[in-house]
Amino acid sequence: MDSEYTRSHSTFSASNRNRDTLSGVTWEIITTCPPNLQRTFPTFLYWAFVVLCLVGSGLGMSIGNNMVEPSFFIKLTYNGFGSLLVLICSIWAMDALYLAYLFLVADKLQGRKGAAQDWWYRNILSNNETVNEPPSVDTTVQSGDFEEETVDDNKAHDTKQAENRRSARVRLAIILVLYIWWTTWSYNAGHNPNTLELSIPVPRLPPQCDGYRLAMASDLHVGSMAGIKDAEWMVEKLNGLEPDAIALVGDIGDQPVNNVIRDKMRPLASLKAPDGVFMTFGNHENSNGIAGFRKLLREESPFAESSLTILENEHAILTKENTDGCSIALIGMADWSGKAGIYSDAVAPDYEKAIRSQHGPNGSTIDAGEPVSSDLPMIMMQHQPHGMKQAATDGIGLQLSGHTHGGQIFPQHITLLGYDGISGLAEFDVGSEHGPSYLFVSEGVVGWGPRLRFLSQTDIALLTLRTPEAMKEEGLVPDLSASVATIAMYFAIVILPISVLMCLVPFCCWLRKSSCSDDEEDFDDLTLKVKEELQDIDL
Image (cartoon, helix red, strand yellow):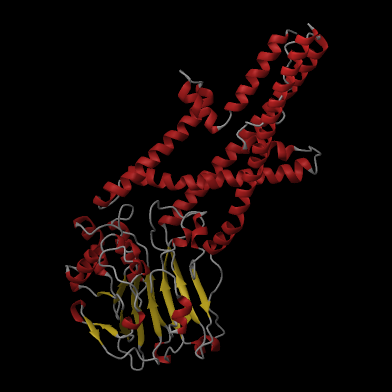
């Protein structure tokens, strides 16, 4: 066997190994004309998909605000942009399962020692490591036996490479199945809100108010990805629940006020409830011009003639259609984003002002002078779920919040760590003689950005307010079970640092080996120089 063939075959194999990565194939597409379509076409499709998603998300955030309904192209590509996170999760899950298989099955049970480490290094270091590479051939060696052994080694290596590629194709097929399955699931979760029905004990609730039905929704985000149809759906659903009152807890609008959003939000004027419809603002109304939303919803038709009431550091009294002995203080707070002072005309939440300021006719505010009676049950509408312990100390029996979207698309859930609640019902016992207080967080009707919900779920809620005594007599307890979104947040807190460490360990090993390789090359150069000098001396 000719040694030149062995050298070229080894070089070709190493070159192919270095190109069997996303970056390698991408570079091949750019630098080769024409490229090998069998190798490069899937990678080309991937980058074309990414570019379309970026274009669609850009269009959604720009011209989408001028459409009553988002176009099909914007829906497809903007949601595709969100699905890239789902794709990352699919790849991560497949790699984690395969690595577990190599460690537990191949390495421990099948006796393939080092299989997991081999795969780990080849993937994390993008095939730049020389793990399991065939031995190089010294061009000065003329022994035929040695060349035959080298050829056998190359054949064995090529067989192993073929097995690795078959395994990679299987894993790719599983990744695509997971991606399609999870993206479909996420799309349905983002477009089909659940209706949550909960019974909540409210401290100091009079027996005459027992069974009060309060419908709640948040985070409609009328804007680039939510149009008039979404507003109509929410109105129809909330009215169909036949509640005593309706609470809209912020981020209902999500673009600067213009004629388009006037049309999109017009259905909200059709919300009906005996005790009224109440709304507080969120950070997205603040960031898109809060003054415009105040004017639109308080002064302009058809909202000025509707039962919609804006509460911004104000309160209203709910009476269950003037039932004797039934009074509930509903306190609407400004959003926490107004505290930073970065949004024009936005105001900070002011609890002391809210309990002294009652909503009056035609959008006016009546300064009662005295705070809400401490004998009344108090329910607070606060868009962001912050400050619940202080609210409970102040006598708030129930706080209604939104904002979190339940993390929306995993692993974004980890960003919710600082909130008092993620989704669902949480209990806060501050030692009050009237019992614990509660925080309910809705995951929202739509959400912001791509309309996908991976490990979260859109919702609206019907909350039945009960006296603690009545619930105890009936043997009922509030549903404090952890939601999928809450579990996903804690899972992200654990797994993301582990994933980062798994990437850093081989990378550090590679850096160390590279440093050692440089030292070895310097030593080899020095050795060669010494040999040359000795040869000169001998001559």
